[in-house]
Length: 192
Image 1 (cartoon, helix red, strand yellow):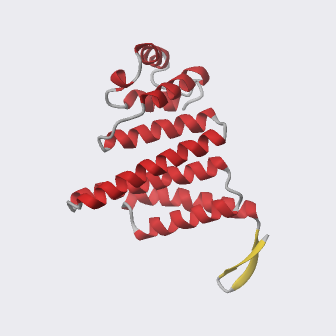
Image 2 (cartoon, helix red, strand yellow; image 1 turned 180 degrees about the horizontal axis):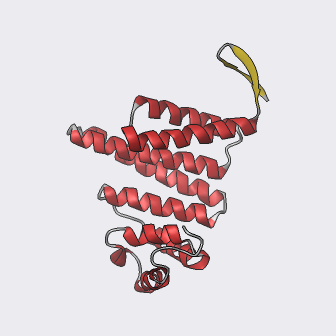
Image 3 (tube, one colour; image 1 turned 30 degrees about the vertical axis):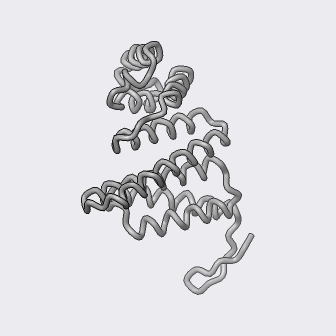
């Protein structure tokens, strides 16, 4: 445990507390990205979230979620730089978005959680396609296999909404996704 000064008072914050604090900061930053765009407050929160998550022991799932939030931040920065016609900034943030997405997937694989890998692959593909970048079709196929094996309805819906998915996936998984999840009306049995 370590001591942290907050409002002039000393308090003890365990590594578990740092992890929770990092999760809250990351989630708040993600909400602000959607509501306000890539502000300096979002940058501050993500920086704190990453530091707190690392200090809490760097759980791969938590680190992956933080890298995913960074990818969304850089994606929003790309949109902002494009409106300002700042080509160098667009390129820089696209590179950083891709790097963050790759780090997120690496962390999620370390967490050994098919759902976290699937969420990360589908989320990254969504960002890549939004910016006209090529998508790793092998990763999409892997996500489709997880969706079909474990019944991840929410991720099935997201996959099926990807533009041009029929060209990105081999025919068999694409057809299986469409057939399996259309029978639920776009919803899995658990409501996701």
